[in-house]
Length: 293
Image (cartoon, rainbow, N blue to C red; front, side, top):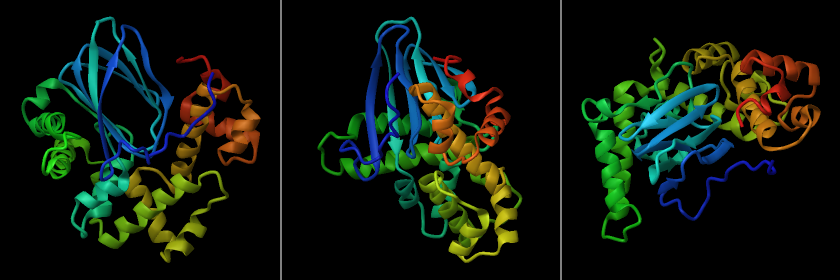
């Protein structure tokens, strides 16, 4: 077991908030151990078969398929038996996603990719990529040809390619922020975006919905209602999901005790931590340690 590391989003590989690279694998290799990060990540499979775990779901992807990891979802990847398998990885910081949209819609646009609502689409199969979602494939082909090439306007073309991919995902079922009947105003989307950003950065602290509403200068009842409508979870449920994802990452990648992990993830009561963990993950905390890896 290695020490727990929250993957940083400020690597030198990022250009204008975008990182793109090729990942090769050996047969049956655990390519990436369980981890999470704030950046949004998209994989485009080129050759071989990969088993991909996203939180508690399992997906089998083949050449021509793509998968989206929204912010702070636990994921890891295991290669199949084929030789010379590989895929491309596109990672985008949330602020870079905002910058791709117009000022009137930037927060709502970003929310589609940083939130992980239950049952929101995250996989696009080869058949879709050659049909209604063809711009995902086109965008990746443009990135393969242009990203980091040093050619004139390569950085502009990379942003265009990323926008093509994201827009196609939204249009083909991947819009997590539109699973609501609300007419999401800019001020509301901005408040919810800031709330999710604040939770992600401060989930280890004593955060309450009322404190957040005071900070955002927004009505508690209105914020609570719209937050649940947009994210699919109450404020407390959303906070607990972020904390439990962090806890699972620690459980799977360190030898720390449940009590240590409880404290590091913002819980101050071990019994409550165990109860919440079981309600979200379906088992006691340390039972996950050898469950997957």
